View 1 (cartoon, rainbow over the protein chains, first blue to last red):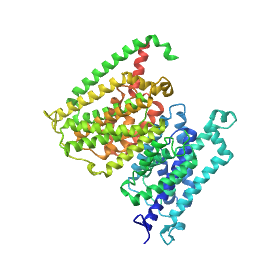
View 2: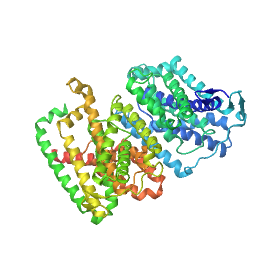
View 3: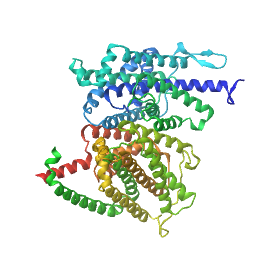
View 4: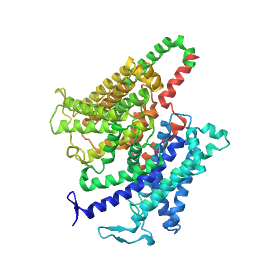
Length: 294
Length: 325
């Protein structure tokens, strides 16, 4: 059997795959955080809870309405994004003139309420969500077995990330968005409804979290606390990448997922902490983050 | 500008404030001295430990303007070290507590060095991530006992004289520790160092242009806050004879933010009031499990949206309005 540094190749490939899967979610979640931060200047602590809501939405669509995974892929992000719009209009919009830390505290409070309510309703045990029929099974690549669903998650996540990058960096809508990030008052003076743009941006960032939740549902179980610890890792990813660029968030997300996976092979004791250690090192060498500008 | 207008009254205001602090302190001490005869002492001890924790946190947030979302790491790690020192090394109680405090101070120095490299929101995210790292370390390290924690920690005797197994002896020891920590924090806030810290909170670039090395001040504030949070955690471990993962988890970091916010950040007595309010609430809602989480979240939302000055902040604003009239 082929070995690399004394570890069998299939083991390495297996963990690499898990790393890419985790990286897909890190990328999607940090992308949403970066989009929201760019325009609203707040860190959305509710992001983990909204990711969880996406998974639950998929579960309900399947079990209450009989709508399958593909419907959930469209409807769940819309539903979660809609709750985001409500949160922004009712609460976040009152805080823009204050210190940005209040936004962090508010979204943390909202996350506690949402996670507490779901745990009250559904307990801490996970609910199962099966892989859609179309993506069952897998491919034998010779050196490893690649489940179809996992390949799909990596592919879909890449498409969504690149699509978001394209919209923000290459379209007119994205140009408005970037302009509003630089100088909202000026953009408003040009006749663009900036408050509405802020609302929709928050809704979009939240919808990305919801989408990640739907894709996560068949891999991890649907669990009220599934986002609580993930979001802390994603914060570290964001600190490492710096929130300056969309591409930075995507590259850092995938890269750190892979590093985490490889750590599981070579030094499993550190697999939970490796991202935080990398964060510490990056802070010492390049405090603004790998892709950050400030 | 508004400040200049009142400048001539400044000294009179300071005197009034000092008088208010003195009176409030006496009232607080009187309440704490009789509390164990009225309320269940273990409950008050728990609240006192959290009150000291929140005061230490408030030193950093309320006066330094730095929001740490990872303060549980100092409380939890100090708890582990003091529990280990008392149980395994057999150190006397006061040395075990000091060992825990020293560990938190050291950890605070390391975490502070990293965290002060970024500001605002990033500072909060970095401290949260570092605390999560400490949490996983505590989960895996052999000396912490993993999921079980360190149980059956001996309370021992304080200064080799007084047996701490009696609730009252333990209570007044905790009260003495709390009071010492509280007065130290008061002293720090009203020292020239504290004034510089407030200047940094208000306008860091201006403080830099005045020649202050703001990074040194921020790091010093972070280390002091970590050490005092450690004192609270170490004491708590001795009181409850237990050091567990609960105290290093991020929910604990969130709880201390909530106590400070509810009580009034940047006030002297706010964190104490906030800690007692939250611990009382926890006492009644603990059996309901997730309802406690929901209530906590709701209080966060209400405080941020409509009650940013907190209980003592509102009270002090009311006092000031009355004085002006």
